[in-house]
Amino acid sequence: MSQYLKQIFTSIITLLLLTPAAMTAQDKNLSFTRNADDDRLQWGQCPEFMPESCRIAVLQGNPAKPGADVFFKMKPKTTVPDHWHHSAERMVMVTGEMEVKYKGQDPAVLTAGTYAYGPPEKPHIAACISEDPCVLFIAFNKPVDAFAVE
Image (cartoon, rainbow, N blue to C red):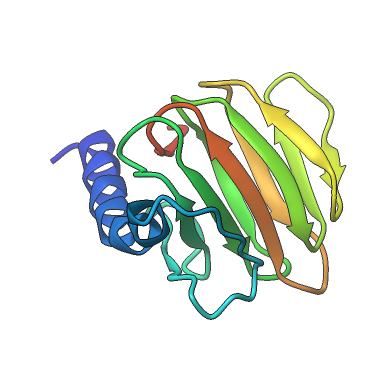
C-alpha cells in the first residue's frame, strides 16, 4: 500500500473513532462550551507521520464532513513535520507557544489568544516551543485530513 493511501486510511480511522463523542452535544441541538482540560474531551491519536505524543479532540461536527472543529495538542518541544491539508485552517492558540512556518513565508509564533489562518494545501511545519503543552483550536471548512510532504 502506498504511503499516501496509508495516511488517508489512518486519518479516516482516527477520525471515525473520535466522531461519536463530538456528535453527543450536536444530537441534542444544544449550545456548549469546552476548554482544553475538559474531562469530557476524548483525545485520539494524530496521523502516524506526526509525533507519537500528538493528540486531536473533535469539539463539534463530523471530521469526515466539512465544518468540524478540533483541539490539536502537542507536548512541549515537539515538532510536526512538513504537511498540508485540503482544508483551510482557522486557528486560535489556546495554551502554550507554537511556531508555525508556511512554505515561502517567515515563521510566526502563536501565543494564547492569537488567531492564525492557514491556506488550503499550503505546506507548513508546526513546533511547540514552550515549556508547557500546546493546544490549538482549528476550524476546518472541508473534511479534516493531514498529509506529510514527501
